[in-house]
Amino acid sequence: MRRRGLLLERSYTAERRALAAARRQAFTEPPERPNQVWQLDISEFETVHGGTWRIAGVADHYAKYEFGWHLATTQAGRDAIAAVELALAEVHALSGHSLAELLPRDDKGR
Image (tube, rainbow, N blue to C red; front, side, top):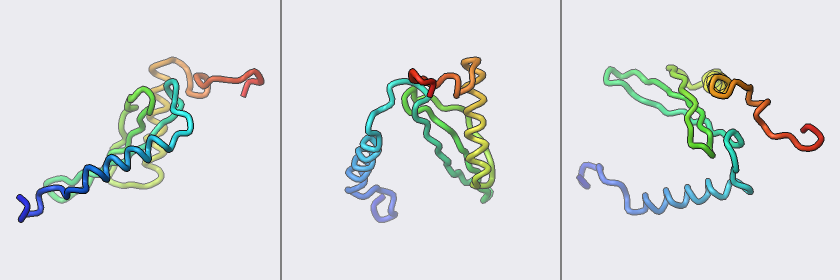
């Protein structure tokens, strides 16, 4: 397997752990409830016939919930926007409220 390049390098696990630690440090205050932090991810998949599909999805960082996926052959800004719009629609479908209505407000209504 090593001769064919099918094994991961020894440093792979250490690199993955370092990246995970950096992601954890990105938040000065970790999210304490759903819908505080969302993450957009676009994954690319090749078909056996040489085509490429991209799947864009939005996940709630706190709840670890995935809000559906947008499937496309492109990876453009409009695809990211479509994925976020799908997430906003699903929040409304699940809760009966828009995301803006679910966000907490301070004493001044902000």
